[in-house]
Structures are given as C-alpha cells and as structure tokens.
Image 1 (cartoon, helix red, strand yellow):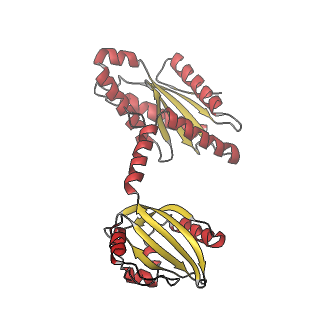
Image 2: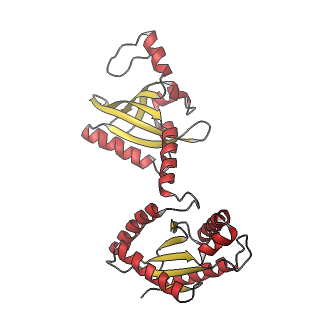
Image 3: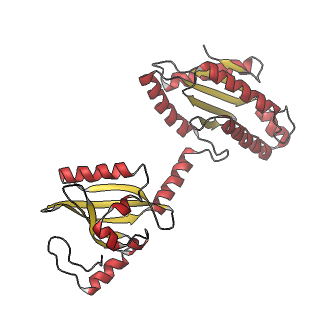
Length: 304
C-alpha cells in the first residue's frame, strides 16, 4: 500500500518531506500486525529495501505470507518463534535471518521491532537492514582465525574447539571418536634437498590428500611444522586404523613433485574412552605416533 496511508491507531498522514526521507532510508521501516487468529500483514512499509524482494507493498499490506515464504527454510521456524515470544511477553524482537530476493540471492537481514498491544491484536514497529556484507566479512574473519594459512585446513585452535565438542558428545552419549596424529617422515631432508618452497608444496598436497579421503564431518588440522591431526567422529578404532593404512599407502605412492615413494608418513591412533579429557586423548595419540616413528616410520600404530 502507499506509504502515506493512515496507519493503525489513527496516526495522521506524514508531510511529504518525511515520506521522501523514509523512502531513501537504507533498509525498511515497517509495521507488522498479527490478528488473534495468527494472520499477519504489513500496514506500513517504507525505505529503499522494499523494492529488493520484488513483492508489491499492496500485497503485503493484505497478507505477510509472500514475504514469509521467502525466508530460508531453517530460519522460518526461528523467526516465527521469536514473533510468538514477543507477542506473548511483549518483549522486543532482535534477530537475523536469510531472505530470498527478487534476483534469487539470499540476503542476511537484521530485524529489530517493538510490540504493542492494540484492539485488533499485536502491532510491531520495527526496522530491517541488509547485513549481508557484514555477515560475509565476519565469516571471512572466522575462517582466517580457524584456518592454517599455508595448507587451508583447520589450525590448532579449531582442532581444540572441535575436540572439546566431540569429546563432550562422546562422554554424554557413548559415541565412538578417534584421533589420528600424522607426521611427515624426514621432512627436514625434504627442505634441505629440494628447498622450502617445494617443502611447502608437499605440505599443501598432503593436506589435500587427507581431505579427499575423509568425510565431510571429519576434520583435518595442521598442528605446526609437518604434523597434522585428523579427528573422526562416530568412528571406532578398527575403522580408523583401516583408513589410516589406506591414507599411508596413498601418500607413499603419490608423486609430490619429487618422484613417488619419496614421501612417507607415520601415524598414531587413539580412540576416545569415556571420561578421557582432551589432553588425555591427544597424549595417547602422540604416544602412538612416537611408537610409529621409533618403530621404523611409514607405519600406523594404535595406542593401548
């Protein structure tokens, strides 16, 4: 509906300069009305963002459903729950969600709204702003903080975070969880013979081989230098050992740019025991890796 119509509650039409100002705002200011039977509509919408969805304001003035249907599937129930809580407790809505625009892209929208009881139900006064760029930047910074610069896999910080999460699940529900510690054999000689640039490429290729052999829910992390950790949720030790052997063989057969058979790894494995701390699990996997190194390298050892 036109933005200069009289709004619920008997408010009078605004001067033209105010209407022009609101139409230039970067976002949307709105009123959302919900009737006792749950039906919702937008009595008032203004701002430059109203054009982005491609939905006519007149349609939304009759029914909010065309806009709600544009919500990302997982965000819809969360927003509906926020509206319900706000209506029941007369508390503000402060949330964000993804909304599909006219060009079919999903944009992140921040919503702030204050409810007010009226004779015909509940009326919210609020605003919505596109925060897609902010969310993308936050995601980029989060990736940087969790990612090893050289190889692109997780770093030590991310590994410790996931370890805490997976160990908590394992302790609560008795779910299997295994950890591999992997170390390149004689890596110093690789750097000394072929140079550090080639050594860096070996580390990148090794990380890629590990990622290719793991499931989406598994995690590959570089701990530093030539040492990596592979975290495998829902994986008992026998299955982890089979995967470790396949990975060891694939690495030994791979040509890292210096000829096949020149790069090998030693792998230590430990399965989480109920009640084990993060440090205990890492220590047991480290002990297995130490045994593999001192047992001749290019082999897999399982902790006791």
